[in-house]
Image (tube, rainbow, N blue to C red; front, side, top):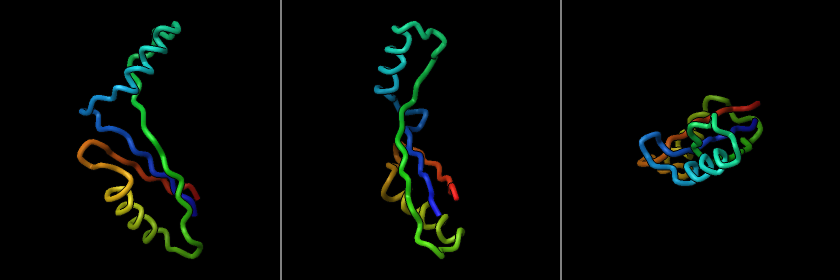
Length: 81
């Protein structure tokens, strides 16, 4: 089983890298781009035989306590297979 955890800034947090990317895109003539928010993702392989609900619970703990800073970031977990 494989999971992907997406981590990004909360919408209330300034994203200077996203702003820089947006400005660059607009400078390249992509005027329709209104906003860019950057983030990161983690691909995590789950041990074979692990029940899906146990994996989901463990991923929630890992995402909240290790992968994301819950003060300024939010996360989303997808189990891919």
